[in-house]
Length: 559
Image 1 (cartoon, rainbow, N blue to C red):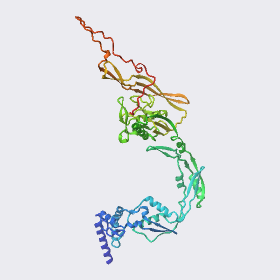
Image 2 (image 1 turned 120 degrees about the vertical axis):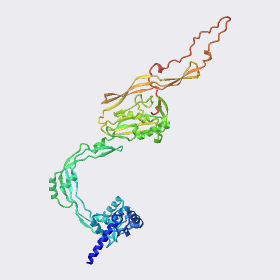
Image 3 (image 1 turned 135 degrees about the vertical axis):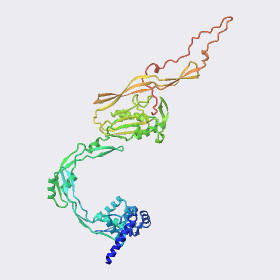
C-alpha cells in the first residue's frame, strides 16, 4: 500500500514536471552538465551559465591511455577541442522533452532519484583529431592486413589478409571524447589488445572492386586551366572461376591468381600529354618604341592579361572580354589613339598593337577569324591589311579555336618587342600558312584648307602633310607539302587618308607683284597696264599624280 502511494506520488510529480518544463522550452529539473545545474533554465539562460561556469582547464588536462602494453597521453588542446555551448544546451533541452508521453514521464521520474548528468558537446579540428588518433595507435599491437590485389599480364594477383591484435579504434575515440565531455579524466583508460580478423574475401565484392569499363583519357577546361582525366583500363573476370580460387586458397597472407580479361583504351593519358600545347602552331612579333612610357605600359598590361589564355576546341577568344575595359582604374595610361581620323590623346593607346600582333599569329596558326576590323588610318608596325583594331564596347577582335586540341596563347612585351605565339598541336605537319596582300586602290589625302592672313594673297603652304588612303585585299594562303592548296580572301581593308592641312594666303600681295602706278597724261583718261602675271601655283606632288610605290605610315595610336 505504501509503495503504491509512493509510486503514485512520483508519477504525479513527473507529470507535473513534464507540464512545467515540457511546454515552456526550459531544461528539465535535475539536469546538469559537468557539475553545472541547468534545472528550469531557458536555452538563453542555460548557455549564459555554461559559458560562466564550465571549467576551461579541462582542455589542457592530459588523458592517460593504456593501449595493451603501451602507455599514451592525449591533450585535448592539441586538436583544438572546445565546448560547443549551443549543442550542449540543445542536448540538455532534449531530456524528458523527446519521445512519447510515457517515455518522457519515465525520464522525468528518474530525476527524483538521481540528478541527470548530460555530457558537454565538444567541437574540435577533425583533421587534427584524426591525425592524433592514427599516431596514437600507430605503434600499438599488430595491425590487421586486409586482402589486396593487383592486375598484371592479364592476371589478377590476390593476396589474402592477415589478422591483427590491437585495441578498437572507435572505442578509443569514443572514450577520449566522452572523457572530455564529462569534464575531466580518469586515472587511466585501459584498452586491451583484441584479436581482429581481416575483412572476408568474397568473389562478388572483389568483382565490384576490380570491374571497370575501358575509358579514354580526356580533359576539360575549368577556370582557364586544363584538367586531365586519366584513361581507364577495362577489367573483368569470371566470378565462378574466382570463387573456386578463393576457396582453394584460405591461408592468411597467401597469394594466388585469377584469370583477368583486359581491355585497353584507345586514348591514354600519355597520348594527350604528348600533344597538349606541344608545339608552336603560329607566332608573330612587332616592334614598338619602349621610350613612349604610357603606350609601353598599355602594351605590357594588355599582353599580361592575354598571356596564358587557354581555349578549348571550338571556343571563341574575345579580345575585349579578356583584356577588359581600358580605364585608369584598370591601370591603363594615356597615349595616342585614333579618333575621327586623327591622332589624339586617349586612355589605352597602343593596345591595338597587341591585337594586331595576335591577329597575325592567329592567321599563321590557321585558326578561324570571327571578327576583325582594320584601323581608320594606316599603322607602322604591320603591313597594310594585317592590322586589327579594337574599341571596348564597339569593336572586338575574335577568333575560334577550330583545331581538335586546346590552344594556349603566350604573349610578351619587353625591350621594344611585342611577341605572340599560339601553342597547340597540328596533325598535318606539312601545312604552312602565309599572307598575300594586294592593294586594289588608293585615294589622295583629304585636304583641309585654312585661310591664313599671314600669307600673301594667293600663296598656299602645306602645314601638315597627309597620307594616302588605301583599299587592300588580304589573302590567306595554305600550302601542303609546299604546294598551294587554299587561297582565301581573309579580309578587305579600307584606310582613310590622313588630312593634309593647307594654309591659303589672304594677306597683302608681295610688293613686287603690285601693278605700277600709271603716269597721268593731260586730257587723257589713265589706262592701267594689262595685268598678265598670275600668283604662283605650286606644282602637283607625286602623291597627287601617281600611286606611290610604298605607302606612308602613321604611327599607331591604339584604337
